[in-house]
Image 1 (cartoon, rainbow, N blue to C red):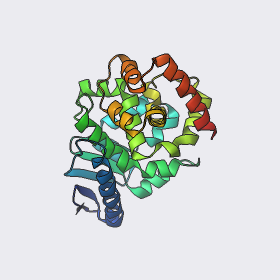
Image 2 (image 1 turned 45 degrees about the vertical axis):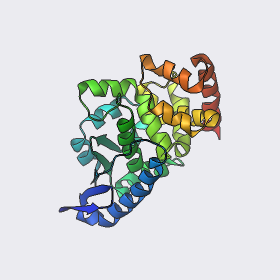
Image 3 (image 1 turned 120 degrees about the horizontal axis):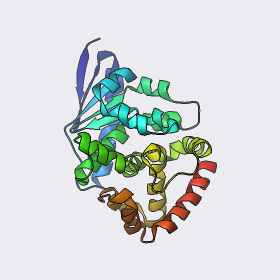
Length: 249
């Protein structure tokens, strides 16, 4: 099936011709999302290519860092790696493929439908925090893994995925034992966003933007102490209580 392009003001989608209608809806949503982020972040990339893949294998072949990121994630979070990002472009599964990827738990499909926003948020984060990718190389991928709780957590938070991950978080807490704080790379996709949710609850949206722009050293506890204004041990106790309430609600 031939590939074609569909353009909007800030994006150009590349997709199979049968996905033209779906591509228009994806770009319409991304334009509205980008406009919202313009009110939050200093730099918001435009002229972004959105590659819409009809099948997971095509996505993995086009984004070779994606299987590595999925590999280091806990099993409960792997299905939510349904896209990837590079300089000036994002790669996502087509909407019907995202629906097929969803599990039967509440919220899974809604979280996956926000994948284009999640991947575009990565480009916004990279534009506002020079310590975060893109671009990707062995060195920047290692930095991504070390700061995965921030990279994936901020993307999940700003894209609106976190409220839809409640059931997946509950599964992770049942099956994986007590998580580290800040979340390790294996937990970043599911639990990183809950750190930002707690920060927003305590200090408001501006604190989340500031944390998203912070340089991460030695796991990020120093950046978290600055963002929350208190010692990491105190934050961890509040986060554990927040996780318990979030997964039980």
